[in-house]
Structure formats: C-alpha cells, structure tokens
Length: 393
Image 1 (tube, rainbow, N blue to C red):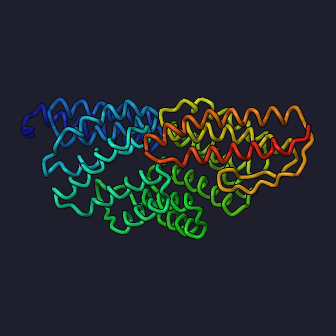
Image 2 (cartoon, rainbow, N blue to C red):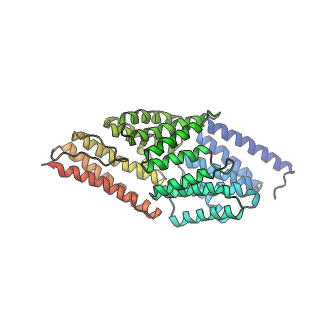
Image 3 (tube, helix red, strand yellow):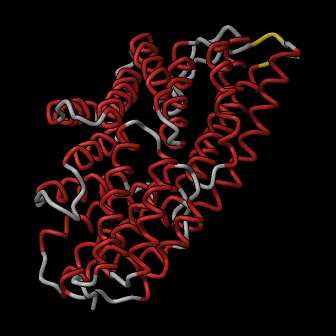
C-alpha cells in the first residue's frame, strides 16, 4: 500500500503529473519519441514507489508509444508481465487497458494464436470477475482485430458493430473515433461500398476540432486514406489518386512508423490503379525500409505491393489497362502479346516477389491458423502466368 502522506511519495506524484503533461504536449505536436521518453520516466517513478495503479497505466501508455515507433518486440516485453498478474478491484480498469495493449501488440507481431486466445480469455474473465459488462466493448474490439487477421471479415464487422453498440465513454475504453474507424476498416475488408461510405461519414461527423494538433492531423490522414480506398472500390482511380496524394502529404507530420507506411501504401495503390507507374515507383522508395518492419502484417503487405508494382509495370509495357490488384481481379488480357524483353523481366520480377511474400504469408497464416494470405498470393501468381501464356515467342 502506498503511503500518500509521505513527502517523498507526494513529490513522486508531482513529478509524474509533470511528466504526464509533458508527454501529452509532445504527443499533441506529433513527437512520438519525446512522448515515449517522458512516459518511460513516469513509469520508473511509479515503480519506485510501488504504485500498482500508475505502474499499469504508464506501462501501457509507454508501450503504446514505442509500438508506434515500430519497436513491437520491446513493447511486448514491457507488457508481458501483466499476463502473470492479478489486479486489485480498484486497479482493474488500468489493468484491463494494459491487457488490451498487450493483445494489440501480440496480434501485430504476431505471436501464436494459442497465446492470443489465452489473453483474450483473460480479458473476458477479468470483465466477469469485476462485474464490468461495459468493458466487453474492449474485448469485442480486440476480437474484431483477430478476425481481421484471420480473414474472417464478416465476423470482424459483427464484433466491431457489437463493440460500438455497447460502448460507454470513459477509461479504459477507446475513444469513439477508434470504434468508428474500425467499422470503416471492416466494411472495406468486406468490399461493402455502401456500408463503408456510411461508416466513414459517421467517423467524419463524430470528429471535432481538438486542441491536439496531432489528433487533428491524424484524422486528416485517416480520412484521406479511407477516401482513397473508397474511390478505388468505386472504380474512380483519379479521385483515389487525389486522396492518396493528400494522405502521403499528411503523413509528413508524424514519426509514427505505422501511419507513414500506411499512407504510402495507400498512395502507391492509388497510383497503380490509375496507371501512373512511374509515380508509384517514386513513392516506393519511401517504403523500402519498412520491408523489415517488426509487424508481420506490414512485412506482408509491403512485399505483396512490391509484386503488384512489378505486375503493374508488366501490364503497362503490354499496353494493358491498369488493374487494382487489391480490390479486383478483372484483367483484360489480349489473346496474343508480342514478346518484349522488358515485359518478360517485369513478369519474372513479379513472380519472384510473389514467391517471397508467399513465405511470409504462409508464416502469418500459421500463426493465426488460417490460409487466406496464401490464397491471395497464389491468385496474384495466376495473373502473372496468364500474361505469360499470352506472350508469343
């Protein structure tokens, strides 16, 4: 039990408050590393006075910041001890928040499904033990995360929808915008244009101008990314390019690795869908370092995009119309294509790229106990082979 009358403890609390405010200010200015540094100092102080509540709290928030910087293994190491701990009733809320953070990082790496399932079960049990049914929104949100990773997109939407339906504002719940944005993601994954449009409108309408510059810029970035994807799904590549370029420009405000790579992936896919191959390759240079990201899903999506860039280049050389390989499969392949050395090379590079990403996809599918990524890559390889077969030697 912490003796809050102790002058040393009181001084420690004052230091934590100052560091908390400094971290919030750094975050509002999109300085993720500085925010992480302040939160780490606050965590060390909380640990030094054996304050369980603030240790859970700062452990979760510091882990979230280093996670944003792409250091997932470090984040997971920081959060893992909570799996072996049992919180007191008064600290159950911050413990639940830390446990949710653990699940998020574990999903992104990912760890094995059996480990993820245990953490989800622990969350559900915590909610029951402490009689907090409103926290079930957190459990369902993380369950939708898992379903998305497993390619169970309808189930992911159902879980996200239920999570939002029972949501009640207040810690440790996520902010409303997080839930609404998840619904947009699930609708896009299901290729449900009408629901995606409505979900994005709800997300935009719910946002208000914040005192936090980071929040406002983050909303601008997320809206640009989702608008670009919606335009592609609507088969309006020029509008997708406009929004994609806004997303890329908006990403300059942050050092959040996940946001930067996401914006550039969106931008490249828009350029490819419109047939702007050279511009797509220019943007690709920014993504090269992310091929070795700790997040498994980023390694997969970027390497898949690399194959799509080569396939898009091959289509351009063959005077074929561009195709959005992410959303559609409607290739218009001529019966005969004249042999070109450059075309042959692009198809060979696409084949090698897809072969490499197939190994990444197989590993991820094994971790999540599914198979959809492997099928996705094989479908791409089939498109490459179809063009090969049309080449006349």
